[in-house]
Length: 138
Length: 410
Image (cartoon, rainbow over all chains, first blue to last red):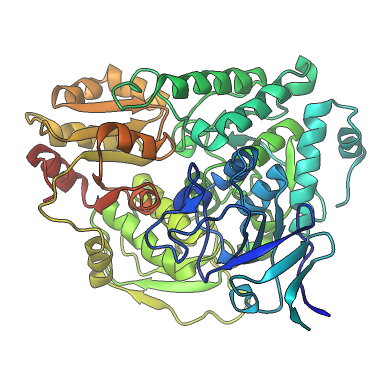
């Protein structure tokens, strides 16, 4: 049986993919090169990593409102994360996910940056409020 | 969410496809944050720079704007945050004709909704400041935190799509800072020094923001012995929102509402002059060749532009350094009329209207102009530009100008 983590009901479609995890925060404007699809902010723990088609697992949101538009444009150009898993987001991340149709969940019982590991194969179901870790047994 | 008959009608498409999209989007966000219902808003402030919108975002706006006029007009006054392009200066800044063309399309679409193209993030200083208790849908973190904190208005961070949705429906989901329960203070800071200029007010905001690190924290800042002016709290709040994603702070005796904790107040975190000096020192690069000095983020008030003009009078910016001042179109008109723009231009600086630098293809500007080392008195700007390939230094306005004249960081 896969390990199932429960969270607040989220936004967007159910999706599966591979986790990319860091105890750091997120803003599409502050942290990403949205032309190349990688984290570029030198101080970010994922600097140099591609975010394309990964399930990003991060602590929370940074300042700025641009992510609300940017996720939509990133999705249209095919360089968007497959899903977003946070401890707790601000309204901008939620608005951006709703506008773009990107899966988003937050508010778990534990720290998501410890619950999930980079490379974990995940199934995110925002409507059910669950994330399954398919490569680990519950 | 509990919906009124009118909201049900919008959801059913009886008021057109644009309003159906808007309320559908708002319900998705509202349910995510457990909103019980909607609250009417008096105005919306829409962030819609084309760097963020991209081609897909502009096409989305054009599709909504193609609806019949009665279905697409905004229901409450709606204004815009800075754009990506100032058509008078974009070539000089190294921006492209393609960027300008996309900007024209975005402006045409937004205008079709009846949005007023104010192109400003200092709307609380220059357009119409909200009052205490007024529910609004503001779309810039700096304007939200100022309106919530200094003025006592009620807004969440409303990104571009959500602020547009609020303009089309005349309401927003009632969650977050629309609710009194979220406006209670959560942490305390005791300041044992007086910030001496706007860069130090920004540094103080950055220090508190990094300590908070969450939209849901409401810090109380105590110990200030003098009342700061609007520009000081503008830089403080903008940095607090940028470094911490914070949307509401309290300064007892200065900001609009009382600081009330849910329980016993926590012990305050002390902040002294060495903390502010240390924050500024993180960005120090003495002797480095200086490519560009930027005064922006937030856009400058008329008094700030006068200070830039005064610091440049009788001097000449180094030939290897650019000086850019960003303000709102209305303040630019005032600066033109009062001769401030001409004084800055005579020294070699550029005053741009309706942009705020970081929302204006900052990466592409750096590549086009060969810029790496930037200097500014805005803590918010140095924080944002870390991800845009710049090495940024934070210093007082006067030191920024002295460095621009010398062509190197002083």
